[in-house]
Image (cartoon, rainbow, N blue to C red; front, side, top):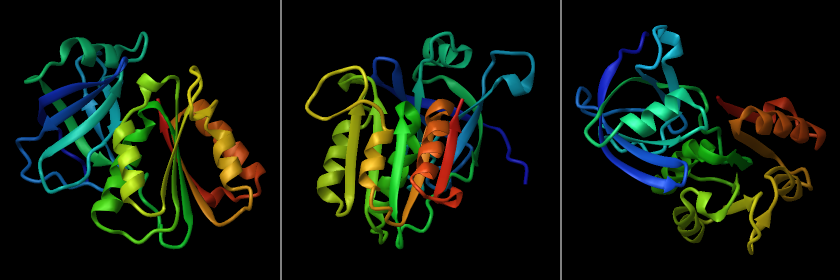
Amino acid sequence: MLLQWQTGIVKKIEQAAPNTRRYWVELPETTSFGFKPGQFITLDLPIHEQRNKRWRSYSIASVPDGSNIIELLIVHLEGGIASGYIFNEIKEGSTLTLRGPQGVFLLPDISQKDICMVCTGAGIAPFRCMLQYIHEHNIPHKNIHLIFGTRTQQDMLYRREMEELQKEMTGFYYHPTLSREEWEGNKGYVHPIYEKLCAGKQPVIFMLCGWRPMIDEGKQRVLAMGYDKKDIIAELYG
């Protein structure tokens, strides 16, 4: 089935980090925007004559709640044409052309195996959606580890929310790590954290979301630990 393009209206914009914003988009042509946690939408931006060079995809960060408003988490990339347009031209009240939902980066069966959600930067968006969905719907699960890597504390997206969720949700563990700042928590990159957590080679599903270098290295390291390709689910950004 071909997905139809529709118009979205930006209802609210919030600065989440120095180079990252949260955008709440209403879809007035849709009464209830149904999607599965982990899916994304595609924007058609007026940045190129060729259609496929105007398209950019963003994971839905909000939980499916029966409404027609979704949240997107967007990073302003240095030299990025699309993110530059969004940050400089899109205001509250602006319209966007989009289609979706799309994507197969979905929650696996979480009742039988532990889950390691590994992400960097805005790659936390689909996991935020999944985690809140699990919590709100009381979905049975084993241990869930969110391993989130970024540079500094001011770049820690959804920090308070994840800290609160760790208190409220049994079996959920939040592992932020910083690569450019000394602090009381984990330092460095994401990979050593899941290597330590899974050193006993217990049954685990690894979900990786972020830029290609992180995902490529993650796949290599997980396989080197003795896990199988089928134990890895990945969503590539960019």
